Length: 170
Ligand code: FE
Ligand code: FE
Ligand code: MG
Image 1 (cartoon, rainbow, N blue to C red):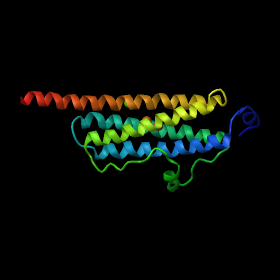
Image 2: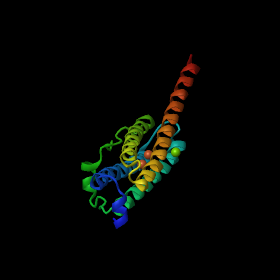
Image 3: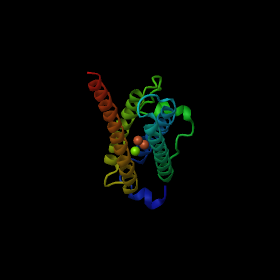
Image 4: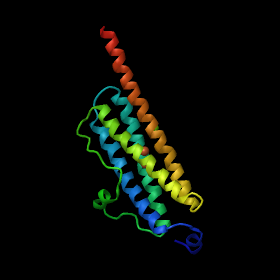
């Protein structure tokens, strides 16, 4: 971290680096949750949702890039060993044992809700104190909110489809 950068940071930089490394581990989990979930998924709307899940996966990877770059700029070291991800991540990875589309989407949904809380926390911690990290947190937060919204919409549509099919059988 540069001289002026250190002087202007009005917060506990070590604590911030710890939070960012936790977020970094969570982004890798989110990436893989989407990436592998999209591949094993079965059920209605599969072909439509699959490509969108892979778009989300790439966005999670980009979040990991942003967070890791920020850790380095703050003078920290991004987690160097993937074995450490489980120690750092507060948002847990959920093995997609059930390939049904709703089960996959619900796993991604709980990941997104956890990510929203994570970036709220980082934004609150840095607000008015470290503008660069604050700006990054808000940028990522906006995308996590969009992800949550996308998934809720797909789940609503699948539910609606099921209700419509029930009515047809009457
Ligand atoms: Fe993310
Ligand atoms: Fe996300
Ligand atoms: Mg989307």
